[in-house]
Structure formats: structure tokens, C-alpha cells
Amino acid sequence: MLELTQRIGPVETSEIHDHLTLPFELRMRGRLRARTDTGYDVGLFLDRGPVLREGEFLQAQSGEIIRIRAADEPVVTARIEPGLPLARLCYHLGNRHVSLSIGSEDTATDGKTGWVRFPPDHVLEELAERLGATLVHHQAPFDPEPGAYAQAGHAHGHGHSHDHNHGHDH
Image (cartoon, rainbow, N blue to C red; front, side):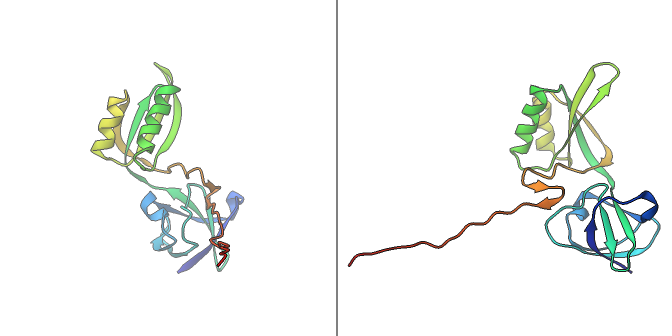
């Protein structure tokens, strides 16, 4: 079993030993046993917290490099006009604390259209339709936005002191 223990930066294509395709739910885990795309047994022994992103590279203790791929999984893609309608849709879905993938694409008939992708959920789907989105249920990679406090797949923390000076005159 290859023990994947280190996240590394971009590498040359020729250095990639294999690919590991995982759904979003498994890419959130720091400890995992899985099989690569060509059938190698791997174990993930990574820091907890940062989600494995599409295209990220991991290195085994023995030196092999594995590239992460986002698996196709059931999703809903809500298509809507770019600009204010897309911003409004993102705001209201995000206010429900759901992970979202956001993008835009050129269409032959309408020019540019925005889209928001999320896991199937009838409440979120109804909300998106009320806001004017057209929904498509399908299988696609789900690689949601990392969030405002994440940088390049790494969590950003903060710290502060809980010390208090209390002077009392008696």
C-alpha cells in the first residue's frame, strides 16, 4: 500500500505515478484507504481540515506522486443570467450554508450564462427555481468553492489571547 503523506505543489506530467478519483465527501477526509485509477492500494495520512482539490498532488513516503481528480457524482446545476441574478442565487444558497461550485459558460443561444452547482436537495432546488434558475440533474465533478478563509487549499486560522488583567482596589 502506498502511504500518501504529503501535499505538494504542481509537478511535471511525466512525474505523475497515478490518479486518485474521489467524490467530494471522501476528499474532505484526511484519513482514508482507497484504490487509485489503475488499482493501487493507497492510504491517505494527511493533515485534517483542508479538502483535497481537483488537480492537487500528493506524494507517498516512497516518492510516488498521485494526482487528485474530482469524481462524477449526482449534482444539480442551476443556470441563471450572470450579474445580479447569479449573485442573488449565490447569496441565498450560501445563506443556507451549503457547499457551492460557481462558474459561467458561453451558450449558443443566450451568450453567457452563470451556473451554481450543489448536491441534490429539494428545498435548495425550489429556492433556485423561485429565483429564476433553470435546473439540470446530472452526474458531474463537484469541486465547491473553498471559502473565504482558505488559501490554496489550506485553512487560515486566527488566534487571540484570553488573558485579562483585572485590577481591584480593596
